[in-house]
Image (cartoon, rainbow, N blue to C red):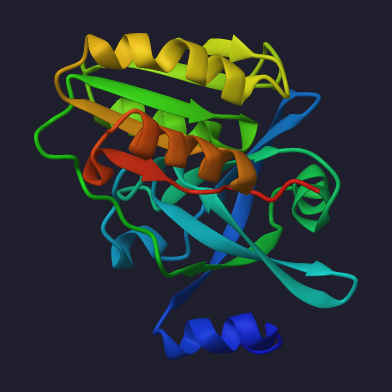
Length: 231
């Protein structure tokens, strides 16, 4: 199954990544810029323990070449062998596939690198910062935290997006300024914070550095991962 995936596929194979074939069962156009695809898992959930923010690498063809992108599992159902994938639509091979996906279509997925460590002690307040690309992971994270209080700064996107928790909406280009203006006050009232950042790579790095160095949040209380690269 890893054949034809170029050097990325070869490296993942050496790292003992597990491959599965997903089959589309349903699709839903949530909004003009957001699409939901339901799939059967090809045995993926039976072979891998489910955890919050769990993700897989999906393989697409881009101008005839292999192209992989990571997507969070939404509402994984191990008993039923199914889960949902959500796509923030833009230009590119992954979005093109999502727009055209219909029942019976298949796509290859690789599991390697996904993981989650529950913060200890349990947070008294989760502070999440993201955008449409990381919305499925934000929902998954906060769902797993139960009744723990949360504050979410969310950049861009449409009103119809599938938010499961309250967010502070931020216009594109204003996220760093808004977070720097509001986060210190929230942190000051939080004895055991957990800061979770998943935006474009440049924004994620800037905010992670600010939270750790300027605000003094311990590195084990900060999770930061760039979900996409700005052009």
